[in-house]
Image (tube, rainbow, N blue to C red; front, side, top):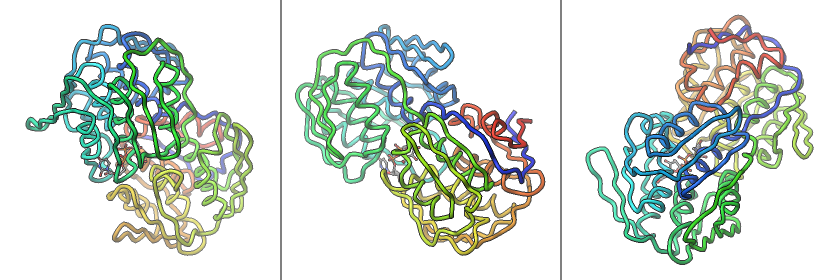
Length: 415
Ligand code: UD1
């Protein structure tokens, strides 16, 4: 079943608990293979991407068990280094197994990764970093093979703060001989989470802004870790509250991870208050356009919330401009929003949204994970009934978006 049906026009009201972070869970799962033993992850979201990654780990010889929100990974018997097409092509994050498998097995073979169709997603920065640590690369048809007799520490400068390349650099350096200094790293909270997790496993890592220093170690230890809340899911629900002019409290959220989205939503007229682990948004007056905003690596506005913000801005008064700086084809959702009556022009990485449009329910198709969530938000804002097709993509990142929104009063069902 991959359709969501929404009866729009109801302001969201109430409280919702934010799930564990997808983009933290995946690298931590990849990191678990560095250790010949057990890793226990609490608050691990039960989503498709985590399921795909679990299947990949099983293919490699690991045991992966889920008990409610806890994932138990035992990598003692990991025996393979080749990742097959079956799941790897569905999951972009399969690429972060390059660093950890290279560290553990001295070799890794992987198909070019899949994931969302949101633009060109090269992996040159990953490969270059691993080569600087001593890996040798071969490309065989549509597969990449990396090997190394012994990885050794190096000083690596990333020309762009790629999240995945930073993760691969860290993962490969943990068991390498000697010290590694990574400069120009991504500073997303998920990188901090990976380092905290690895430290608990016995790795020696220091983080100083965009610089990460890793002192290579021979072995790691069993560990138990609780994953941080998902900042993109939290940001999605903030947008849903703003778009429906609702009033919502997010529990188990980290306001500090959402400073840029909170600032932009305040510009629309939303009132937002925060505590240590909660965010309250009153979207009653979230009716103003945002003159100009752009996506950027953290701490900038996340590209993963761009589509959801676009949905909100369709009904805002005035012209809004969004510049997408991270992924080149991330405006595909605009075409679907236009079917609902939105006035959007996209050109050269910029979207111009002319509001206020009055969104009308329509049949639309989710083309990527976050774009799908944006269409759900538009459906909640629109008058009449909206059907969002292709919702298996939304399941990649949201544990149960219908349950969460329904608990806030939305008229939403999976059909
Ligand atoms: C991660 C997130 C994704 C998010 C993105 C940016 C995970 C599993 N996914 O993806 O949700 O949208 O960060 O915040 O954590 N690039 C290169 N060469 C490379 C690597 C990247 O040119 O070798 C470019 C990409 O094409 C893109 C930009 O760098 O334009 C950002 O990519 P990156 O930060 O690597 O994102 P991901 O790790 O793929």
